[in-house]
Image: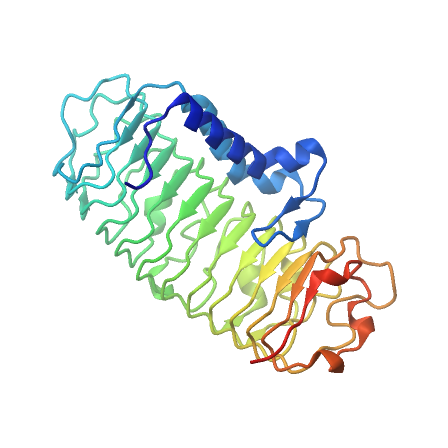
Length: 363
């Protein structure tokens, strides 16, 4: 059985504690946050955690709320009728529902979370979600949708629609969704030409967006300045130009691993002044991206599995000593042609922990 939302007091408490630890536990206790590889992220500020705090807050609101489900017995072919009007969480994942019709949720005015993951949905009526004035979480992943539905509730804070057949992202679909914080669209056949310019601009609170494992060849234009995490791993991006990162002044984490990136335009990193993590591993880079040495906040840089043949003395650190405000906590360079004995030790003069640098051997 996959994820279940049959919330017992114990499981809810455990999830809340886990989410709390991920979102704010480090800040509240004074300890440092870490990334998924255990590398420390020093000086992380609360404004970069807003999408994580969403999970904590929603857990708090819903943990004693009425729910209907999980109905994941692989039998339902339509949304059940006469659902309790006080339902706040509706779990219909892992069924055979093919269509969401107008009126399916007509009495669910208090619904906060709707889970339709792993069905066969290919059609959603434009008015299907009209009654859901309080809906905050909408999970549509693992279906057969070719486009995101129109007229999604303006109360939404989280939309997940990965593993569908979505090929177009229209600006009109996102109009009015000013409360959305998390948008997950990975593993869809999306092309860069299918993303309307400025499609996400109206999403004033959007903090986390993931468009990974698709067919896009460039960073989408017109991303909102509220973004703190942008995940574009596993695509077909070949280069990074400075204009594509323009205005992303709050971006803290940028994931571009497993692309075909061979160059990073000079000045690109200047447009993301608060960046803390940069993932460029498994690409085609032949040199370290320019601008790292002068960047004041970046702490984790993944550059392994590229074609980097040399490391310059100022690639990672600024001229002189003690001029970086944040020390690196992780730099990965293994599986590159560069040999460790060819690197001048002073190239890492601004890195205080020797274990933070991983060089390894080139295979």
